[in-house]
Image (cartoon, rainbow, N blue to C red; front, top):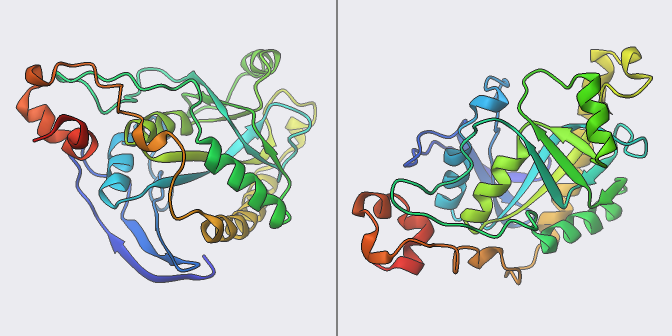
Length: 272
């Protein structure tokens, strides 16, 4: 990425296994940043096989406070044309059996997830998109499907009838785990094509989609540089204390092994 400096790679092992790839850490606009390829470099990991817990826990280990997720999506609305960016404020889960929590094994927590995206970060991304000359929509619903196959026409039309905006395969689990890790999270949903509902869908070629991916990547680089430069030094949102009233288990009843496993997440609330 242009302007990315002091680059080095870090391979981490978490209590939940290994992340998708090495974290690439360095500085951008004078700020410390970390990048992770969720599908691994070379796109080797299917959405259903991503170790979402390890990926987000690794970010927490690095001290990450905000995550900007860049994701290719299909559009479910005419107005979200290819090359348009959508910054969702809601998710709808259509996955099956994916692990979406760090908790269990004797410790229970129920975080608030009515508003799954950090509003402070979402507004900042939208403002920076405008500054970067990238057309974007602030708000909308991201349908997270299981995959790896794309939707049937029937499914696509049902999602449209529900008023959904874009469809992808990865971001819901990331958002849930980031909330439990008290990390701010936002999705930049980069439209590559219309989902199969659109009358022009059959005329779309792989070459066109790849070309749109490349153009979206260029726009994303411009956007991220502005977001990182404009990011406040401190967080004023509630993401940083999402677990404060969420941990239900009696402290005296917490298994020592699980408590130690989750210490990075819950230690400030549970004590030694």
